[in-house]
Length: 525
Image (cartoon, rainbow, N blue to C red; front, top):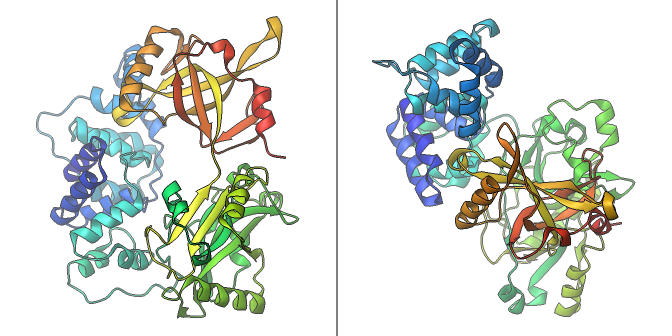
């Protein structure tokens, strides 16, 4: 547990990608089995730990600490697990448990013994170890590491290609003993999984002005950028798997789509909710995401659909080395032959000039489309984000001037700062005019701006609600967002997609902020 705790602690305070990779490489190279395997699983969400951390912490704290002291400490720290880790007494001669001990104990531990077991582990750990243990049990490490980044560090640690690890990943299970044997040369190959496996996905880069200026129109193929989530669907050996772009198996959330694909092929496309040929708002797709067992009613109300972009293999033939146009021809031939249910082909667009291309992009918002994709016709299917092959040209962001009304402390290195901001717009007329919350954002500002925002929140607090402060409505934030739609879950009746703070309008009076009606007019018909 000590090595794992040190790793998490250092990752939290290491902002750079290169620094995080260095820390993880050192961990994988210098931590023995099976500890490093369970650490790898924790970093890649490969462990399904079911532990009611909040309930057990509340139970432990109630019997050991003054409730008001714990509440005030929690308010200052901003995180329940970190508060308990700091306030828990450290033993004189701690004998820290191994991460593998924790995992193996949880596999058979009765629920009635959770609090007793956790107290025993906490007694044997220092403050950093306690914090790491509680984060691990809670299933949300929040150390700025994606599964892909952890696999990249693993590849670098043992001189492998990350794409090679990705292709073998879904046949392995924690603590990955066979995987580490292969990485360290103790075995020549890994057993092939009987289930369909994820193939490293090809990603695009944003289209910059310079890219458009040098663009040769006939060198590229063009498609709409649909507003769903990118997935890979792999079928074969009597099974079908659906993977997110991050290699997460999301089949359980979309069994209707998986069951309708009894084909031996791996295809790449956009997962959507489709009704009578029309793409539903992204909010409808969100109703299906992360639901491990959707009901029949849920599947009927939000029917899953896959709009196909590309084919990686068909009937056992790997197509990734072929140029895009050849893969598209193979995809169209296969689609016409097998007619996969709940699937269609994303249309290929043609343009007579770059002016027509730009005009079409400018009209994407009016059409309810997220933007355009530009792909080199001669491009093979390359893992990762190779520059110059695929471009995404997203529609310009919408913006609105909103008023800061609530602030909440962040987590990790931001736990001492108010960094999560709820903002509002005006509703009503005359004396009945009032602010209605319309969204929340915690990104888009620099560290220097965060310090100034935090100072403003503390100086203009009206009320406190635990870790949340109600703020005097004086500061205007220019909020950028990718889309907006109606929502019955919010008092304002609207929901923004990917809101972030574009600018802090220290110069603008709150009375001149936008209205809810202005936002409603932005909703695409």
